[in-house]
Image (tube, rainbow, N blue to C red; front, side, top):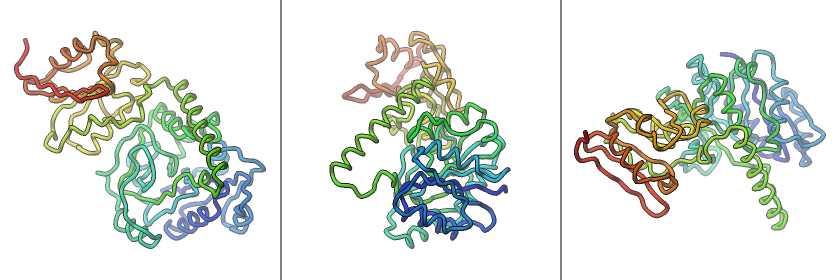
Length: 382
């Protein structure tokens, strides 16, 4: 395996950063990595402590340049040929974490980047845990972190708290888009860029590290300061979401896990299931994670969804609802319509067309703002 440059951004998170680096030293194979820390003008003693860590490659910024720009600095400073791992300062790594991620990263030439699961994250990357101490965390992770290719899942985006990237991919696409500074949505954008370059992303549910979550936004503040910071965070999130949507033009629910998919059960294994309005494929990936034996496909009515969708499933594009039948192979077992059915023009006619693509006794599920519905096709329609 290649060596890995572990890139950590530091901004007034001294205790977290110390935990993180100490865990890397304890649970990562010797001589398999280097640590690069980009300090964004910390004032809590972080810089002074980092200067004492002689094996760390330190970049000390005179001002806070934000997360994507800081990550780009760290990636540029990495030793030639090394793979690149973006790691939040508020994480604690665990036994076999990096070895497991590397196994997944090099499981195929088409794999561009991988990430893991944790205790505190969005995007389907969080699992329930009950440990209370660092010692209990490491005991849990020792039992959990066993490399298992059956737990590697293709995923549309990966959250940047732990993001391992092949060197060849970085050399091809470059760094993060700094328009998202100070942070938020840069990891979604980077994930899309990697997939547009022809690579897949893997969520590795065989590997767990601890994540405190947004430590640089959780410093001790009085109520007015905390309120102002919360408002600023919400404003940045909204602004960066708008930048992302303007750039990629995907459907607004591209990051949503739609609850209607919960109607599927283990006994549906082996069935042909089609999702209408599946955007870039997050629900398809999540269903494949739950029920590997499903035969999944999708339909989209946004050409940008089709252009940016995962390549693991047949996802067909149709320009208008009136032509929906042409995009759906006949004899589906189950069709799920994602999103409020009342937003579909002439929805009754569309639902009738969808029902006609079902097998006898096949089921069509849809919902509005108040109720969920299930229609079963009882007879073959000629």
